[in-house]
Image 1 (spheres, rainbow, N blue to C red):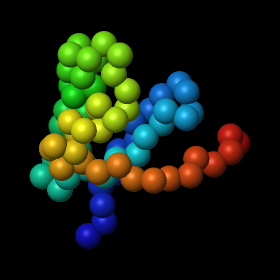
Image 2 (image 1 turned 180 degrees about the vertical axis):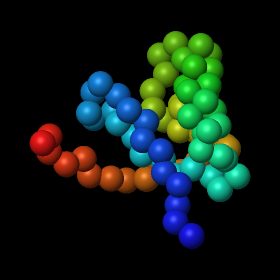
Image 3 (image 1 turned 45 degrees about the horizontal axis):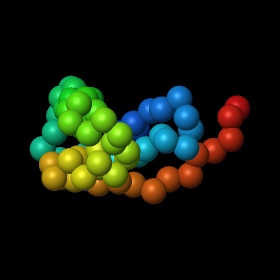
Image 4 (image 1 turned 90 degrees about the vertical axis):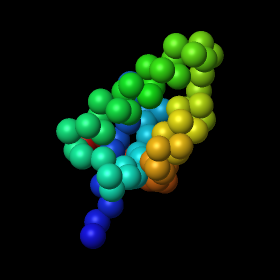
Length: 73
């Protein structure tokens, strides 16, 4: 079985993230969940960074995946 992955986009290419989605999340709910986590972290930690968001995502079974972003075409 292949892993489900989700790209967390950013205007700043250095802030783009790739995460592995837990098997118990459906495609329709994972985006809503992840954006909810990000909004919650933004509200509770005004000077948050990626590590704060990742910590909450990992509590729910998400995993950060290393990747290489290719050149613009």
